[in-house]
Amino acid sequence: MAEIGALGGVKPVGQPPRQFFHVRAAETEQQLFFELENRQWDIPPLRILLENVLPEKQSFQDFEVDHVFSSIGHKILLLNARRIPDAGNREPLILLAFEDVTERRELEWHKDAFLAIASHELKTPITSLKAYAQLLRKNYTKAGDEKAAHMLVAMEKQANNLNHLISNLLDTTQLQARTLPSQATLFDVTELVHTIVENVQQTTLKHQIRIEGTVHEPFTGDPERIGQVLTNLLSNAIKYSPKAEHILVRLVADPDAVILSVQDFGMGISADKQAYLFERFYRVNDQIHTGIPGLGLGLYISSEIVRQHGGQMWVESREREGSTFFARFPRMPQPDVS
Ligand code: ADP
Image (cartoon, rainbow, N blue to C red; front, side, top):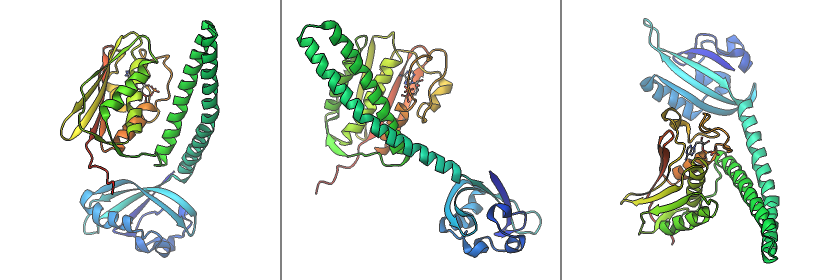
């Protein structure tokens, strides 16, 4: 819902959204905006925006007001404002648009809370399914039953896939709530990259993953989260290059940053879709990419992790030739160990 009120200087002269705010004309017209309804709108950041920023910038968008109003209770409103140039000798007008997003925000919150609980609860049974499958596989291998052992490998792989999907969902809800845990320490990036590549290599028979470059100096960051970024990029490289045989991981260090990249020789991504890849739930929906499962969360989570390290992600890609995903991590000051 959008309701529009026009305010002269800071005095309402048009039709303020009176029905929405349950106020009468006499209570609003010719009143100073910040004095309306017992000064409920006198919120310091809004005052700064209206009085200082607006005269310079002429407009602002989506300023969020989260407030308990005496007349209508708790509301989350998005405010857009625009200065309308002075017509004649009157003071300039400010056009304020209010959008009530209370219900939308509450639904988003419930959805995220549900996803967080559901994914957390799903992780325990999957972990135990995986452990039993591993145990059975070992027993069958010992007993020489190759066929059964092979089926159990497939079962473990599916349990891993499910675990990965659920972890992505959980991370997404934590990112939304800004509670994604992260721990910065000094670590050896080259060693981390080799460990992750060895692990991921075991999940593919078709692709050979090669590593180029080393970083000699220890790096400050969260090794688990940075490993997660590399795992995501490598599993995408495998998933979206089913006919290719090589994947290349590069490590480049300069005095200011470490750049990690993963190149594949697969489907690639057309130029017009590349800008959306790091958005939540975005999946390329074209002929080349059809039939490949996923949630469209891996790149979103990865780019958020890189952002939390002060860095950026980007992609270079050509359709049907392949893609290279880059993650640049600036060198941070060393953690204070005192
Ligand atoms: P998911 O793979 O689960 O869909 P991601 O967030 O990891 O989610 O990726 C988003 C989308 O970007 C994918 O759906 C896919 O269309 C495209 N994509 C990601 N990596 C590659 C790649 N290496 N090659 C081609 N397309 C890719």
